[in-house]
Length: 271
Image 1 (tube, one colour):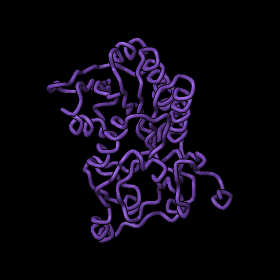
Image 2: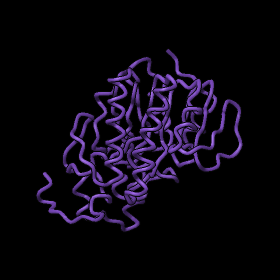
Image 3: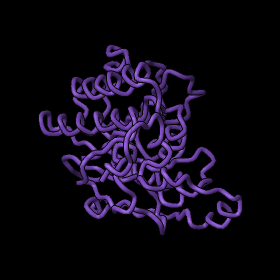
Image 4: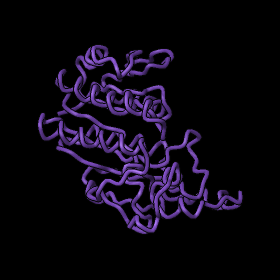
């Protein structure tokens, strides 16, 4: 089966804008949904201004759609009062609306912060135990769990992308990014592979470029054909010349800067 009618939620966000441009013209329809303005529709596009907390609006947006790329939600750590309605309830609404309207494939924008409290000296694959570093990370584990449920219970084909450091200026700017950066063209390629691959049940893939310092292993999803082209090491000299140094606590864990936020534990107890 080909998936030619695509809905992107959160289409006015940083990743959404890049996917909109990168996927334009490759599919029969790009339906773009966001609560924020989306500008003018280009050829092959439809624009929907809607809130993912509104189930009726989501169901309407799902009409005729074959694949959802779900990006909408709070994009960084925040208070629970913001994470809950968008990243938990809104995520559920989007999966459920897709199910009700017969959508066959769902690509969920998860995050590396779902595994952020694993120590960085550990090379991580898709089978590692979830270990969130924040409320935001918890919400991404929730989305991955929903994806597994909808794959197993309802036969929806689900891909969860643990996205690394996506930069609005398309350039890594900090020492940690040398490990975690994902470029715009690599992000587009990964999503396109997840849309186009003929069949899968459920998968988790890391959204990361071909960084020489990468600590995430995509070998279990090699079948997708994702071959990242960019390497953050090109920017290493520039980053180090700026005098930046990663905080020693942050450097212990995969999640970096999210780990010390509100931290009151004992790092030595985190194995």
